[in-house]
Length: 185
Image 1: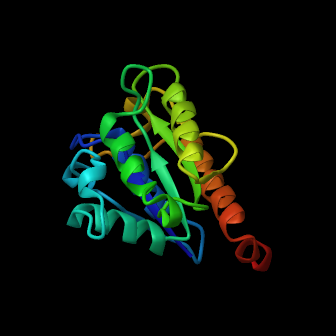
Image 2: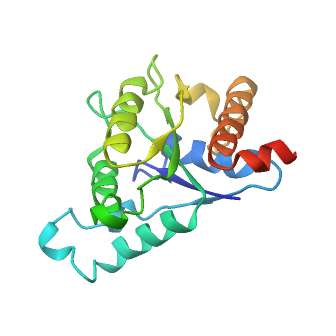
């Protein structure tokens, strides 16, 4: 099974990208987590250029989503919601409507912030946007509050409680996306 992890931040020192990298390390046995770092390469969504051939960065995003069995989208919280670059990626992945990469795709959400609430508002908005786009969003979020305490200076996830929560979050995603894989384990 393959999960595509999409960090919703472009920042080099992003705790959300670090959380997505931790998912690679903590993936259940038999599950591969791949990272997508191309949000910054996507042009703003424009229906006029989204025809038979979309821009190459958009084609790559769509192909990687289609090839994955599930997605883990990790969002920071900007002004109480999701970042524009992440919303833009969802807009591209939700088109064309009759064959969109996100249609029916199982998605789990997570988020990290240095504040006290773990990007919970952004995760709630993300769940809504993904659902409207046609994705099957799993129950629950994974809020990581005070992320600066959960990661070390090299942005490795060192908080054992958060590590355990991430492992359980990934297992729930796998169970939702490929129930037979979990039943066989």
